[in-house]
Image (cartoon, rainbow, N blue to C red; front, side):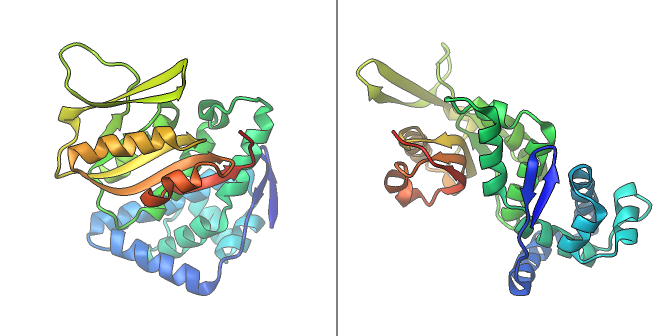
Length: 269
């Protein structure tokens, strides 16, 4: 199903009931522990519906959630909150229904630029929040103590995720400062293009469980170098996510790291 919006279209798929049940069980494991967590999830379901309402009609939301339009209207307006069980179903269905791959490709095409700048692609806070929420739901149940951002372009997304996981953000830097100890490496992209990467040693310990978020993977060299730096810290890398993949040239290089790429844009070196 295609839903017209200010971003041209959102593509929505209808997940299988088995997929919804499995995803819902994961959400329950992550949020079913305390009253505070259960309330947090109910509020999150309301917020996600509010996030989608400006670009979807109540009929569109009904087609995703299966809930009557009158009930959805009351949720969106905040007259009532969905029950915990209802909130779980709402979030599971939305996370499985919205096609992030299509959405991100469409946003890249709208930029009409030979250089892909994720800060421009995700300049609208609506998109950043929607993307962060869906990624966060995918990570439910995983213990994450630090989030490593490989570039400033992903900071809007990782900042939102960090609040949910109560996990500080560590930015990979392109320059060093006197008096600070780093894990570091250099990448020779060409004889005239050498990139240096630095991660503050005191911000990551061997007890940490890391989520690594990259903006764009092209050849995969930079992300591979970041992951090799993090190996020096002896911290555990729980998950690696790249927002955009350009072409498929990065796949072989990053295969050992099980990188999840949200959208792949056709591109030739």
